[in-house]
Length: 408
Ligand SMILES: [Zn+2]
Image (cartoon, rainbow, N blue to C red; front, side, top):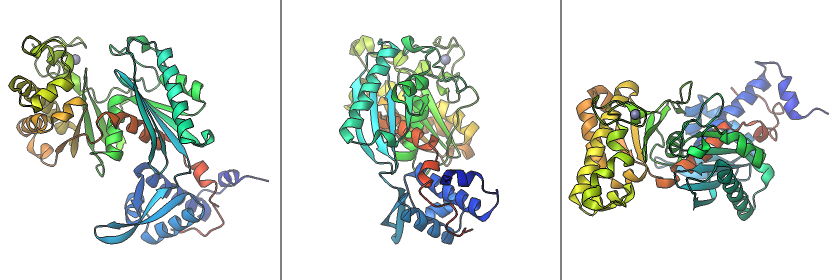
């Protein structure tokens, strides 16, 4: 007896049943990426008619693929559609500069468990993967989810990933990890598909799906930590470039005769904004054990030196953002990392620089917001990556492809 999946393969392209199957996939994909959508939103996202969406949602609900709950949209009664919570599991793993964070979520975008632990930056990559494997297994045990339901893992690393080979490029942050293939390593340990990306791209995805970027199609997520990076979302998708290097906003030249940057150039944005260059400015007046977090805290408490430094950082980031506006015209910029906690102390100067340096038509519709997810942005972005990369065939194999008439 042939399985249903085989039946789909042998269908004639363009037949009513293959068209119907394609429509089912479009609806499931839209809901999978967004978490939950009203039927009107599904129609807008997929381009299908309201009647087709209504019929497909009924079919998917009967097959147990989606759940439908009453909600209100703009004061009107509506039906919110999400994938069934027990349809599958995704896992996010985020290696940060000083931490390891893991989250377990379901296909309805609910986070079932999340845990973070300190990670020694000098640890070898093998130790790091051992710890990640342990933490993933512990959370799977704690939530009692069925391992067979794991659809995929999203993995974040704080360095550039070569798109073709999946190799982690040279990084001053995790020197012991240079040349490793993180996705391959974790796939070997967990036995499930693993997709990898850098921390700025995952921060962008996290904020896009769960945070300050919800509802936006064009967004830049700026992360200021020991370096300055950006994750770029263009027309709803992360833009990586052919080599995976897109978004290196930290190396925009602001001053040709400025300080020498770790990249070898002079006066990059990073040399005016990243912690390693900014914290020394305060060391003679505020001591040597400063972190970006403590400087932000003192600035919020009114310390004039810290306020000045934070405002200058904002002004310089704003110059970089203005360049980004002129090139890509995003509708939103989300500031992540510890610096975002400074709120208006840094966002005000960013907006001021954008107003000054971006051409008016490029900066006019821009909103600059702090990230809503704080230190969780990357691990939630890793969940979003796993959700976006998984296929829908297993989800739809329970839905008869040809037993119902096609709706167009
Ligand atoms: Zn540089």
